Image (cartoon, rainbow, N blue to C red):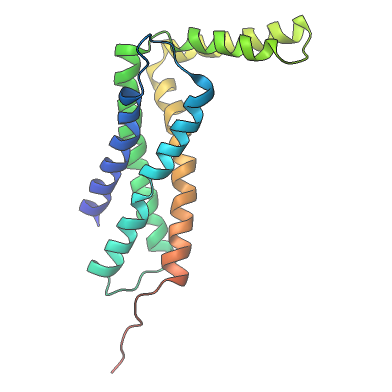
Length: 179
């Protein structure tokens, strides 16, 4: 099982992480409004490898039967491996291409808040909180890595749960034959 989760986890992580480089804007200005959509869509597609891994484990190594717990654990391991690969890819991208991420995000948030019906004081409070968070983000690699993991892990948990329900409870290839 170790080899299986490593392979599928690395594949999922590389798919997610490669999107930073593939979607890198020519002018260096990130599109935060679409980036979230592209990011989570890519994560969902990449983490669909969990379904393939669980099916492969069930069919090749477990005589066509797998329980909920084992299915979920395979998904969880793949999610964690993919998350680490994704966070490392973001760190490489951030260091080389997006070191001004925090500034760009604050500018984006400022333009978004300007369209809302907020008082100047409420807007400045929100912006100052975000600036402080982005300063911490920019100056702390562990914080960046943690926040990057927080992006992908919930997606993986949902897909792991769905695959465990599908394979562990509903899609049994065959029942074991008892002689």
